[in-house]
Image: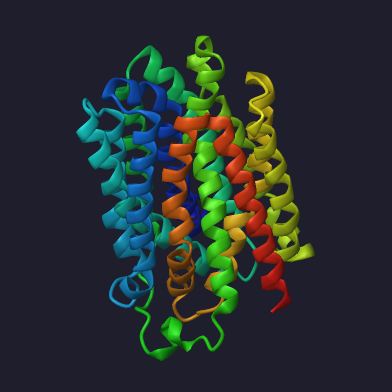
Length: 380
């Protein structure tokens, strides 16, 4: 009984889900050069694939508020976790262009649902405990992303991407078992109070949503393009190209675990403003393509700058609809859809035409726009 209370608590189970999600993203980031080379996927193709993935992710997350009125967080997670693991493994072992592109797009649907409901359950657990713990959940994503990115670089180049796929399946299997054991089904959200229409002024959520889309575009670029970027700077170091994503994830974690204390002391909005300035500086350095070592440091700066942004956005959004926390996050995700979906294609086109460095410069400009939106939201 003591073991279950300490290690298989709802908080531990959701921490494991966040870690599994980070493992999938890190595995893709660290293996991307190997996977794309085998499947014949170009930089522009990858941008299109990420666009499709983003579109399905947005659709899945935008539907979360409605789904939460018919199924519990537990029921959804037990369904989508195995699917997310299987499609991630299929991408990692894709033998052809068609398999890679199709699997990447479908992954967006199941990983988007995983993202939405793990955050909704995490926000609910934070409310249950009556103290800030939300960014720590995202910290587990960062640690898992960092560890799996560097592990995937070695596994994929030295053994094969099948080994990376096996790693992903095992981590997701453990998370699924913990959810099944420790998470209980919450009451289904019903009535007008559980709908986004219950909010009289949605403009703050709209600003949060657009900013979130720009931020997520930056995070996606940093994780999924870092290995390709470093590989282009020095192909001789392909085996450690995952260092970009690894440092990004580690620096995310360094700030995310203590960030709940910072949220309590300074507030979400001021903390987000300072963080965005740091992230913008990191992407601006990457735009100059300064070399392998400096670029790894710049990815670390981006990791520090983006660490608290989405956790703060989701925590703020979930509080708007306390009767259905998935609805608040779902609405923000829907608004975030346009920049989130369009950015990968634009990034891929810019990367294919002018280089990945120039595309990172574009991301810096997008985050500057996000900073302006956060400032406007604070005035409301």
